[in-house]
Image: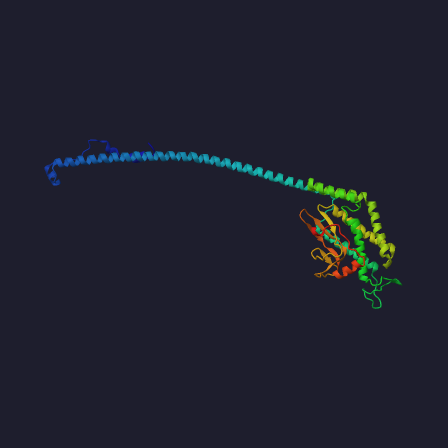
Length: 392
């Protein structure tokens, strides 16, 4: 039984009487009016009763089938309700998990933000503790190199250039100094300035810029320094190598300070002995100014030694072919057959595992092959640099 049973069984009251019959006609006249005999009427009545019973059975069978269908649907509905309840509870459980995970995520985000802030503060503290390492990039290194050369060039011109009088040109063979001083016959004044700058540069390069660390003039000690540097770089983390270089440079600068003072004095003395008689300024001031420039170069060399990269200086020997990609002509001209006559300031490059990167070009005076041969015949032998050109 289910809720549909009364609907299907509500009108079956008269179907349970098995002997139900139709009212029969009582008179022959009525039978005659129907055109049937009593026997025929009885047969029709029996047929109708049989059909009625069959219809009743069919209806009961249909009711039973519908009851079974309704019962199945009701069970499915109950099952679906139960599954829906399970899903609802699962949804509530998932929502609670999501809420909790969101809380945990918010807590983790807050913790991460706090950790980032603490890490930033620690990095700042470390940076303050390691401030003794004065960092410098390629741009600053190139700019400092150019400024040092410009300062030396300006200083040389102030010490040796004189006002032109009586229509004399800068290339006159005779140039007055003071009252009666005369430049060497046949040596133009512009060439003299180049010679002076080149001479100062060579001493500066050999004694200060070229060594592994400024002041390391003993070849055996410098070789050991370079060998140790390569091993530390190869075997230790990068920051250990960088700190080793910086600490070694600081220690070497402290130990070699007196030696560097003597080196600068030697350069000044050598310069004065060779070119002092051409100058037009006070010797004491001239010596002091040149030594000041040399110490600026020493300071710059120390700063380069303490970087996270390896910086080196290089210069070309006289007669080497002009290469515009790494050389800067003092005149701004780059003839196809030009060669290096003199180097006025070295090239600065940064060494990497695979190549050397040019930071600042070499400043050179160009001479043609003919003029170089003439100088060679006069006994001016080309200077040999310490680094092979094919490495660049």
